[in-house]
Amino acid sequence: MARRLTVLGTGYLGTTHAACMAELGFEVLGVDIDEDRISALSAGRLPFWEPDLEPLLQRGLDSGRLRFTTSFQEAADFGDVHFCCVGTPQGGEAGGADLSQLHGCIDALAPLLTRPCLVVGKSTVPAGTAASLAERLAGLAGPDVELAWNPEFLREGHAVADTLRPERLVIGVRSARAEAVLRDVYAGLLAAGVPLVVTDFATAELVKVAANAFLATKISFINAMAEVCEVAGADVTMLSEALAYDHRIGGAGMHAGLGFGGGCLPKDIRAFRTRAGELGAGEAVSFLGTVDDINTRRRARMVDMARELAGGELAGKTVAVLGLAFKPDSDDIRDSPALDVARSLHRHGARVVAYDPAAMDRARAAHPELEYAGSILGAAADADVLLVLTEWAEFTQADPELVGKAMAQRSVADGRNALDAEAWRAAGWTYRALGRPSA
Ligand code: UGA
Image (cartoon, rainbow, N blue to C red; front, side):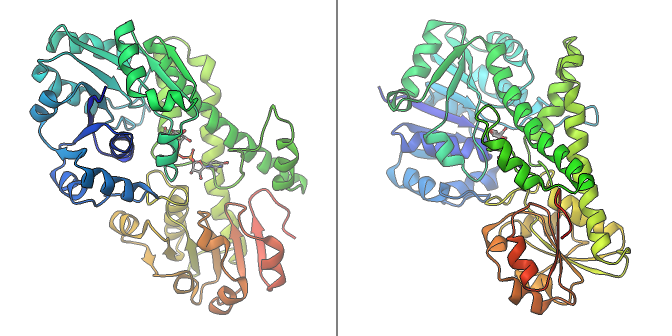
């Protein structure tokens, strides 16, 4: 049965979910309070960088199955299933999640719901949120309105593939009816063999934060090994290659370098610690504080390495920074390790000239104090040190000889262990990398 879906909140998650659901054949209405965003999406323009998503958006619009609006009334009248995809950013220094967008969304929608429907939370939330939202919903909406929780595991840069071919679906439900509705919505994916785990609310919420906590821990584990490698004269890239052959460990998501950033892992591990503490289980996840600290130390180490390559003093030196986004194939600069390092170099008196294939506009708007170049060679012009801080293919495939000609001095620090060290050394570069011997 072709159900009519709404997607509330058109950020990375919501826009991807809306376009993918339209691609799967549903009629979809995307809703946001940001009028500029809705106009852009209605015209087929993505307000952020995400490979493969724009053609899907355009196909959805052309087919008439995908539309966008700022009207909650229209959404309430239209939808059989309402997916709530609004952001849950870090709330403040204490690290707890800010749920105001989620509350705002439920408060705006619920009183308008007059037909039977399912409201499905997809945002990342602290355990216990769904239970309290269900109460809130029951107080504001009619009796035929129910809540379910369906966390999302998509990665930026792979959002379309992760949504159309997810590794698993998780749904937290309180009734057979809610389960049946979601099984119907995801029937195509289930028929294609995607595993489904049906749980209670709290488990569904926790699967998501536990997954991100594990991923962050894995990254910080290998980065902790990188710290040890640096003092022991060992090479973390060979260490992780050797570890990866043990299938219980595996190599995926264990790439040593500048560490994790973005709008998810850092804030999710902090919110998890805060919530676990509130629930009386703070000790159980206290290691996440260490995970966070290891991650932050990598950024400081990168600045030290740049200083060493600059001859012991950053002031007055020109540092070319390649990469500003928190990872390749994204223009997202939220808690970006690369941007953090660039800002820190600037604070230490270096002249920083940065280039990123996608994140320039966002970085320039947020940090006009940095200088920006239009290409790798533009950033490298007369620079004393080159830093590669985001592993875009454009950087890893760059010709070390050509880049070297632009530099004042051939010194490079590879913050992502992404360059071909031998090729750069053969072209006369002093090559340094996190977790690897200096020569
Ligand atoms: C992450 C999770 O991977 C998704 O499963 C989850 O759905 C998403 O958060 C979310 O909560 O919405 P994402 O933030 O897009 O996805 O990025 P990742 O690919 O996980 O990378 C996160 C950071 O870790 C990046 O800064 C990346 O450079 C870094 N990283 C990743 C490493 O330093 N080493 C690795 O081996 C992998």
